[in-house]
Length: 529
Image 1 (tube, helix red, strand yellow):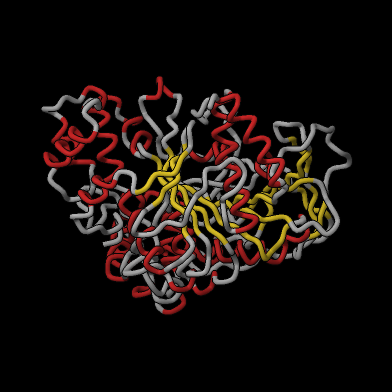
Image 2 (tube, one colour):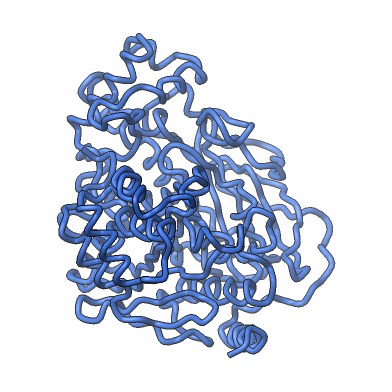
């Protein structure tokens, strides 16, 4: 099938499933307004790539300023009078670099929705950003929601929440019961945001009973945690995670040791921690981790038995979310962006120098010489740098995805698994299908300069395939339909996996020999020990 033919088929399928883009039209006037539970807001009109007008509301507060309640559970946003302007992104969570505007008053979200339609019941898609638990925001150009909202007649939301020490400093054993949930304050922010969605989705034409969480990398990991949190039960109805898994969380002993390491690094008492300037507290991100040799202090979810009563996916998938349909996926060359882009000398590796470098970055504790031998047998055409890419990708987050998929299969929960093989266009594709490449594809933002997907007919067809699958899933809990190859549930017998590429297809147990090889070693989520 040629790319042009494929594009036509996908466009036709989108028309049949109700996910097609609409004809171009001029943006209406005046600026859009709507009423929330906290007050009235005024947004602005933006346009999808097709020219379809989309309502855009930015920087909406869903929670109060967290600075006066540092490390404590969030409070809802205060009400206001008059009409609040919602035309600029709000501050990112404090993180030391990246977004120029950062503040502890960061509990804000952004909404994209098509034009008002009476009695609309649009699916709501809430995106949780990546960056681990330490960085990122909902304002990335790759995650602007206008194109996705227009394509699927959907409401698309991105958000900010507390990160790093502000969101995950476990003080329960040091500061008493008031701080029992401080290690998961950032996750509590997400619950508050979802409560806001429940209470306000309808004003944008969204259906609060049809909420899909989707997220990449750390965003997917946060979703895995929410699936195990009783306070989040009923606030979302489907989940789609991309290269983001959370099998285990920190235990209270390790999390408390990390809190002490932060205090020692700062030379600060508990009382001082609560009032230190934001910039000063951020310097403690350089503290040495007490259990991970050579690492800065880890920030992430905590098994506090208050907010998070169980590990997200250990020893089994959370029973709490067994009935929630789930899509999970990884990219074939995850470490293309996680490691190799930051160290181009990897392309100079030889068969002699590969073992030492691989031992440093593979994470899974398996014999590196055996790993190299496996890859040379399976893929004899790959040079050392590509063996490094494949082995480090398989030995890191892909292991966690396999564990989650297997746990869901044992549970009998509705689960679909994919692998992105579509390669980036950066440097003639030598980084492969790297970590984050699926973000512009599902958001239909392949035109963005940082997308690395290309924006020709092939790239747009790939984006249409993935975004339409996401939109069908958001509507019905099943990504099947249109021109997509039938996508079965994942089970332990066949392990059927959707291989997203220029020629998308389903494959049983892809990389099965790699899975069995790395499965010899036990897996513990990095940082959670």
